[in-house]
Image: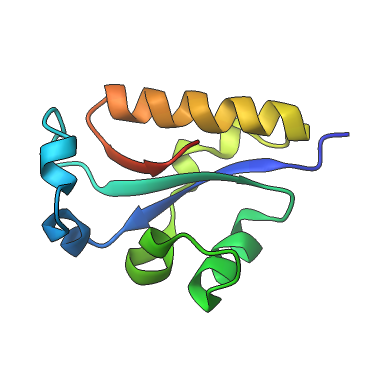
Length: 106
């Protein structure tokens, strides 16, 4: 059943000042936001709220998460759990290739 989703969270610009972020992303386009890519069995909105509350949270989203960027992921959802895991990796790789600094996307 298609009960899962991928999602993308825009991160605050300040994340770029964290140690090693720019060094690890030398090809990043400074005009693009930093993002976090994940997958979930909840709605992206509920998953973002969990991150912000610290529940199974990525430190990147808990500390610097601003909002969802549905224009980058909506067209892929809904997915099966396996599809969401594959799409999470593929979407993160695609965004990196296009100049985004991407966290998550395992």
